Image (tube, rainbow, N blue to C red; front, side, top):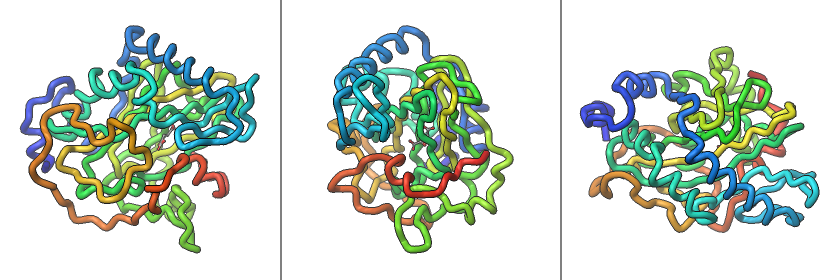
Length: 299
Ligand SMILES: O=C(O)CCC(=O)C(=O)O
C-alpha cells in the first residue's frame, strides 16, 4: 500500500504526527508503553525458558547460546520461535497494542513474521552490528518493520538499540564481505558514508517499545554494564508485501494475519536488494553470523 493510502486510513492508536514522524525518520519510540499486566507474565514465561535451557551445551535451531553459557550461569544470546513456547508470547504479538501500531504504520492488513528474545546479559552481552533488516527478509516492498520491547529499564551503558534517523531513505547495503561471504553487517567502508554521529539510542523504563523501518540502519553495542538488557524483537509485514526468500524462523504463526484481512494483490516497489543466503535448512542468529567480523559498533 502506498504511503498516501496508509495515511488516509484513520489510525487506531497513533497520532497522525507519530505516523508522519516514523515515515520521515524511520523509527519511533514509546518509553514505558507496556505496563505490569504484560511485563509480569512475560517475565515469568521467559524465566521458564531460561530454566529449561540451563543444560544446553550448544546452540540449536531455537536457542542461540553465548560461548560461556553454563548451568550455573545461563547466558543465552537469543531464543527464537518464542511465539510457540507460551501463550503469553503469542498474545503479545497478536492481542497487544503492538500489532495495532504496526497497522497504523504499515496499513490495516498486517502479517506476523517472528518473535525472538535478544538477552544481552550483563557483563559482555553480545553486540549487534549495524545492519538493515530488509536484507535479511526481502519482500516485494519495504513495508516490514521491527519492534523491540524492553523488559527492563534500558540506559545508555547497557547496549541499547541505536537507529540512524532517515537512513531508510538511503542506500540498501550489501551485508557481504569482499570475498562474497555473508556477514549480516554493513561494512566499515559503507558506514563511512552514513551519518553515524546522528545515532539515536532507544532508552527508557521497563515496557519501553521502539519500532524501526526495514531499511533503517540500526545496531547495538556490547552490554558491559552490570544490568542485562533483555529485549523482545517482533517483526511484521504489510499483507501486500510478499516475501520471496524462506524465513529464518518459520514458526507455526509465521505469515498469520494479525490485523485486517489477507491481501489479494502484491505491491511492488522498485529497489535493488541483495539476497540473503538460503536459510531453508536452518538459521542460528544474527549474532552467530556476525561473530567472524571485526568489532564494528562505535556510535
Ligand atoms: O537487540 C538489538 O539490540 C538489535 C536487534 C536486531 O536488530 C536484530 O535482532 O535484528
